[in-house]
Image (cartoon, rainbow over all chains, first blue to last red; front, side):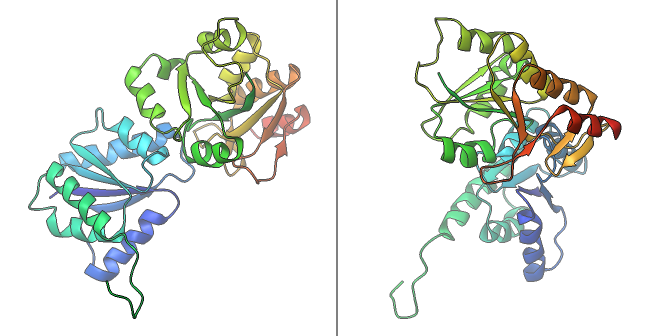
Length: 135
Length: 168
């Protein structure tokens, strides 16, 4: 199983996981972390520890979801990727991505899963038609 | 070239800098001054990708930073608006010690580490940090803490740092 880490500003990640749990029930090997109050070194160490721990527990790697492609979470995840273990980073995390992640993480490898989730996340973004508009 | 913001921030280029301050100050260039990162081309590239579109990034060690600002053959454009970043007060103080003029320094993010005391939610200091800030004050630099534009500025002076030192 591929491990998931949702690494975000503030409590965004924790709240997203709370909603995932509300919809699907408790999910194993899926956690959230925040950059709040952490230096870039401590944030990098947090990611590295999570990825290493997952890899020693027979995970097929870790998918790190981040909210912003160019913030401290992105920098920390990229810096951690050097020595931490198998991982991929996907930015722009949203609920659709996380729900799809739980469906496919046992049947796809890291690269294919990352690609799939980017498409899934994009497909969930759009202008939603109003009640009397054609979709 | 005008330094529109000289900032101490252990996250260096991140959202508060690349969005918050950059939106307000419209910098042409961000100078990230850190010996360790400047010596590592991969780390340099990681940080450079965090800059806002249209803003150049120079990752330089302390010696190169002072030279770039102070010698007549600067690699910076004469009218470039520059955000200068160091990760800690020690490096910013060293730039001042080497002759870089710094009228104002912004303390923007110094996060928790063992042996540091909290003075603001986003500023934790140890004695080495305090020494660096004291040096900047002694050199005539105005030192304030402010995470993002619009936040209240907190002025640092020797009395304030004495109080912080007393808590360590």
